[in-house]
Image 1: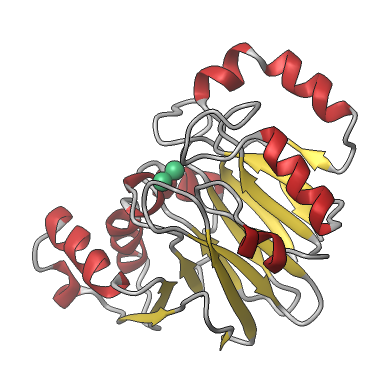
Image 2: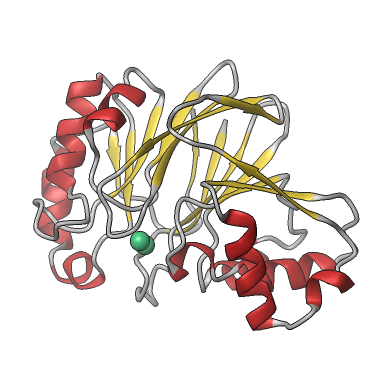
Length: 249
Ligand SMILES: [Zn+2]
Ligand SMILES: [Zn+2]
């Protein structure tokens, strides 16, 4: 799997953009993980020949994770996309996506040159979509958020979306190849966000060597970067990516 970090910031982080990751499997399937306010601009600015996503995953319905969808659809429509665009998320995804699209561009879904299709997942089941297994666990966030374990048969990648890791998350990520996790502060401080410390604990408990931390509080990242880097130096497998970084697992 190849991982490309489109943005690594929290909702208001103008320096690092909203958190969004493009995953490309060995067989070439592309999955866009979350699509917040700033993501379409970064996405189409980054790639000269923008690779179209095959699937979109939405972890939860906060604006910094899905309000970029209308603009993404607009660009894909301009690019002449005709094949359906599947969006995978929790229950209610079709209604929420249509709501935000209709607010941004009323009536636009009817004009789209491609169909939106929706797959819902729940923590109770692993579902197979597009040759991948999609398993989820609820995190501790201010809104219902699903952390996603993507398994292409060779590698397993976990993407947290927002929220602290829970017991089911610990079980889900056991031995996976890469954890991509939000880490808002150094220690657990806000009730509905994770931290660098709790992420490191999660990696230890789950026996995972490789982890990328993102969605840091913008001021924490800006003013305490030295302290963060010092801590991460002691954990060689833990990365603090910036937008544009690539990683292969
Ligand atoms: Zn967020
Ligand atoms: Zn959120």
